[in-house]
Each structure stands twice: as C-alpha cells, then as structure tokens.
Image (cartoon, rainbow, N blue to C red; front, side, top):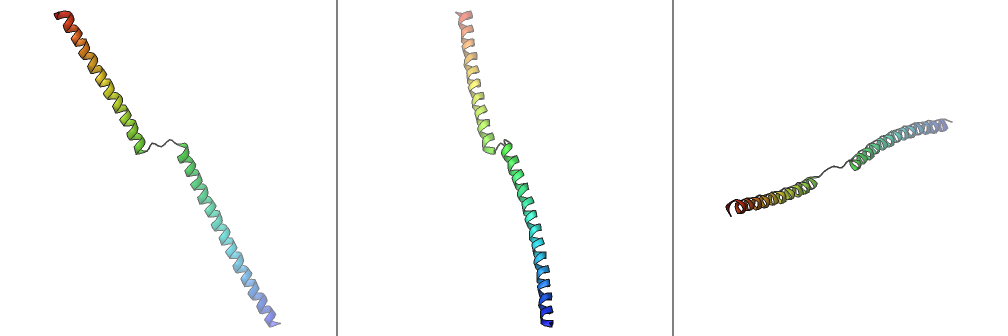
Length: 92
C-alpha cells in the first residue's frame, strides 16, 4: 500500500512538472509568435516604402548632372551663335 501511495505521489509530482513545462512552452511560443508578428510588420513597412539607396541617389544625381551639362553646352552654343549674328549684322 505504501508503495502504491509513493508511486501516486511521484506521478502527481511528474504531472505537476509536465504541466509547468507545458505552460512555459506555451508562453515561449506565444512570445515567438509576437516576435514574428513584429518582424512581419517591419518587413511589410520596408516593402511599402520606396527607400532610396546610395546607388539610386548616385544614379539620379549623375542623370541630372548630365542634363545640366547638356543645357550648359546648348546655352553656350546659342550665345556664341547670337554673338556671331550680331557681329555680322552690325559690322558687315
């Protein structure tokens, strides 16, 4: 009889231990899900926004610099053409 009571007590202790382990696992799984939810939200935010990388900025800057140089050359050629026209008109 004592042996049976001892086994019952051991089983009760084991059940209590398993229940506490189960609760700890449930808590950790819930925390992991919360962490994963945060990661998913952050990933979605990054995907939604158009973040310019350094390379993108450099490409755009080069494009506008090229446009500026073209306009500068075009304006210079036009000014020279106008100056030559005035010289021809007034001096010749």
